[in-house]
Amino acid sequence: MKQTHQFLHKPIEDKTIVWFENTNEYLVLENTTADILKRLSKGLSVKEIATALAKKLSVPLDKTIDFVLDLEKRLYTPKTKKEVDIVNDYRDVKIPDSFEFTKYYKVNNVVFKISYSSETELSYVHPKFAHLTIKKPVKFDHFFDVFIENKYIFFYVNKEFIGAWSSKEIHYFQGKFSMELIQKIHNKEEDKWMGVFHASAVSNGKKSILFLGDSGNGKSTSLALLQANTFNCLADDFVPIDVKNKEVYSFPAAISIKKSSLDTLLPIYPELKTTAEYNFTRLNKVVRYLKPNNNSFFNHLPCNDLIFIKYQKDAELQCTKIASVNAFQQLVPDSWLSPLKDNAAVFLDWFSTLQCYQLTYSNNEEMIATVSKIFDDDL
Image (cartoon, rainbow, N blue to C red):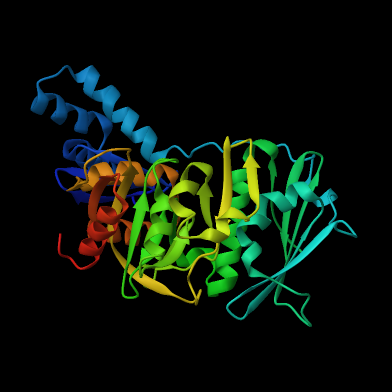
């Protein structure tokens, strides 16, 4: 017997956003299509729904049957998980007896001991957290082990196996590493997070704004400019939002500054001149890391606004509200969203309350002034 509770739906503007429990997938659908899903979930037969649809739309029955069958498949067919060949069985892999590098990091009052078996593993994690390094302490709260074996990178937390990834999946490892970090920093397990967004989060001390956009559009540069002008950096690149408060939580990684932004930022941050440079050939980018001005990584603040930001040379400043549905379709693909039904419902409710903007600029002062107005609800 088919279950009847496998999707959520949320009307937004003239569309319906649907979440499928079996795949943790979100789709923006026409309202008629969403209505068919609702009927399927109530147990109505495919032929019954297709007949009514064919009559309503004046199209052949066989076409509507195919359409409804496709929707039914989406609703009830579990997504097949990709088999990962991890050296036969990870249980045969043992944590090494010794590591080439051991670093200690302090975030708030939590101390992490992180061991890396070589410079390769170190390069995947350490640069963006180097500003948190402390001398070897008397005691630490958690220990992470990162090592490569048989071309897979293995990750253990407090001796518990978390996962293993191939060299093509390093970004998944880095995401999981960051997820484990925020759970320990904020004392919230994974099921207490609504989602993590590939964005930059800036605050005025009372609330936060998320900056989104494709790589190279200027998210991190804009964040660096704003934190030099009375605002605070809450998070860069990895923005966690919890379920209970629906608030953006601090993430202590440094701000990633691309080489192309150095001319703009060196007058404001002269320390960038001597900061180590990292060449990530896999991502085809050269970056330096800027320490965030956040003095307390306990911070968590509400977020009412999303800004899709783009620096464009010689462009006139343009800031316009954009359709929530368009913003949703850009936000979701790059995000980690909780697969739990209750959390998905919270995410849809939270998103439906947001104001969404597109901001294109070339003049930094104009951008800062515009963001100030959005913070003040004065745009």
